[in-house]
Figure 1 (cartoon, rainbow, N blue to C red):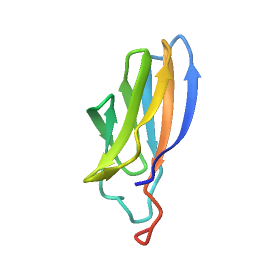
Figure 2 (cartoon, rainbow, N blue to C red; figure 1 turned 90 degrees about the vertical axis):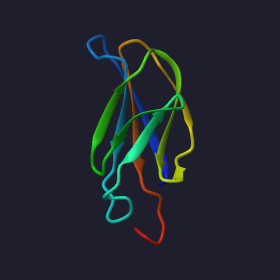
Figure 3 (cartoon, rainbow, N blue to C red; figure 1 turned 120 degrees about the vertical axis):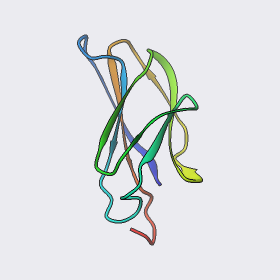
Length: 98
């Protein structure tokens, strides 16, 4: 898994404070398996192939990482203000199983 590849920040008063994880479709690798979403060291959910998952977080500084089996993305720090959304995009690593 290549992990998290992009960050986009948006903020409006009508939007709850949350993290959005967008998973790009894979041809073969990891297609049938979900990635576990870990925020601040705790599993908060998962995201399937070609899916979007959203998780509520408190405003402030956090870390995010995606896991599958024994491997995963590197841990990325991020900050979020009140009524904001931070979006991350993920995809499998490139390799022979693509």
